[in-house]
Length: 177
Image (cartoon, rainbow, N blue to C red; front, side, top):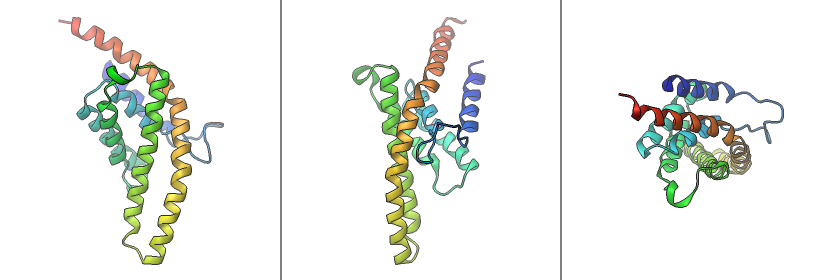
C-alpha cells in the first residue's frame, strides 16, 4: 500500500505539472510539483535515496518535455542537498521550514537549468551565442523567482499528507513480524 500511495503521488504531480489552473501561475510560470515532491521525499531519506528519486523523476519529466536541458541533473542535486540538510540541528519539520527549503531548491534548480542552457549556446556562432546567453540570464531571474515563490507556497499541500502517510507507515512497519 505504501508503494501505491507513493507512486500515485508521483503520478499526480506529473499530471498537474503542465496544467495551469487559474490563479496558480505567476508571470507564466507555475509551481514545480516534481521539485516539491523530491524535497518532501528527501527530507526523511538518505542522500542516495534523495538523489535517485530526483534522477528518476527528472528522467520522467525529460520524457514528457524536451530532453535538452535535462531536469534529471537539477532534481538529483535538489534531492541530494535536501537529504544532506541536518534537519535535527538546523530546522524543525513544519510548513515554514519546508517552504523555505523548497524556495531555495527551486532557485537552485532553475539556476542549474540556466547553466545547462548556457552550455548549449556555446557551440553556436559568437553573436547568436552572446545574445542567447543574455536572454537566458535575463529570463532566469523571472523564472527562478516565480517558480520559487509558487512552489514554496504550494509545498505544504504536497508535503503534509505525504509526510503524515510516510510517518504512519514507518510506525507500523517495525511492529510487523
